[in-house]
Length: 181
Image (cartoon, rainbow, N blue to C red; front, side):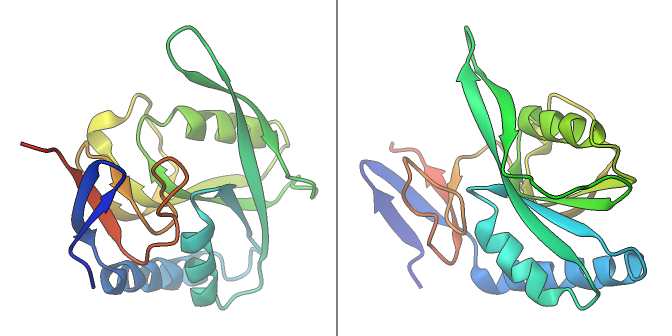
């Protein structure tokens, strides 16, 4: 396992190895299996970053469930990106129990938009399952982030679905950026 990697001109060091990710994912799966045993939940993965976490999480789910993926479309505002629409959800979610699967929640802006869009579809409940969360970056309060793999600092991370200029999503481990001296 490489403890340090370089992508373009940026250096990264190992933050969370795959063994830790899998252990956390197993524990989350056990909890979801108990809480949603008779509810036929729909797991909604937010692309592109959630694909690896979603795949490993669903391997731990032993109860009947359904899954779908969606993508957020962004437009650029004056100072930041804003979510324009959700793309890809084509199933009827009315009165369903939804578990949004995210790779990372930092500001919470896209998650807020996703939750609001799903609420308009008259779902019964919405829970959020995220691999990573950056509490110090949060700009919104959520009472439905029920499953979190790891809390991390304000750091730039890549690997296990998270990218840098489209690269590194395929890495098994999560690496954090190390500024050059």
